[in-house]
Length: 231
Image (tube, rainbow, N blue to C red; front, side, top):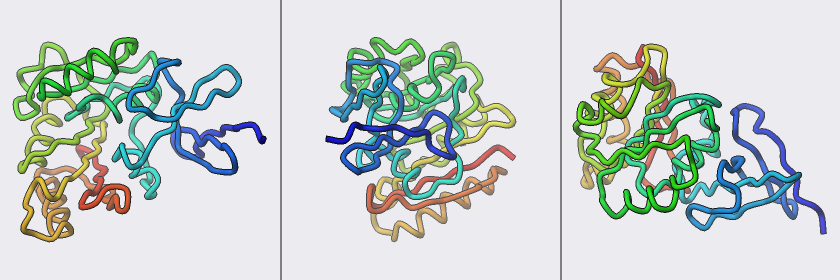
């Protein structure tokens, strides 16, 4: 049987391809070897453990596979993650920023937050749990510092407004944001493409630069990922 191999993603720092039985799969280098977060496959190569990054479970992985031109999350970065849930994608972000980075994980649902704290964050020193409502970013000002990136994955009808208020509070002037738009959470009666264009326009009207917008089908139906910056 052929041994598994690994190679760095040619574009994105901290992201890898693991090759096993002739199949390439997206992965990150685990910051908590020996444990899994959501039952993901792991591959051990040269005394290092890589976690397979499932695009059907992570919108960021889906965006990478759909051709996202830039992932504004790098080694040593600080990231404000809105809607961290139990930490599926946030744990991969933790792997990418490594021990010198920081991931502030904002979650308001009690059960998800409990899973985040008790399972995902327990052995990951670069993750800070924030039990808070992303609609009121001023309430976690004492915990969250200025960040390089804001990542938003929130199921609210006013997703763009919530993202904007967090950007104004925490994102550095040269920082960037990733916005996972859930069309059905905004308006179930309208075509998702219409919703995506509207959310993009809302961000642009607030003065933000939208650099890219990618639909996430077939990994996530009725979702898109928007990459943007303050200016």
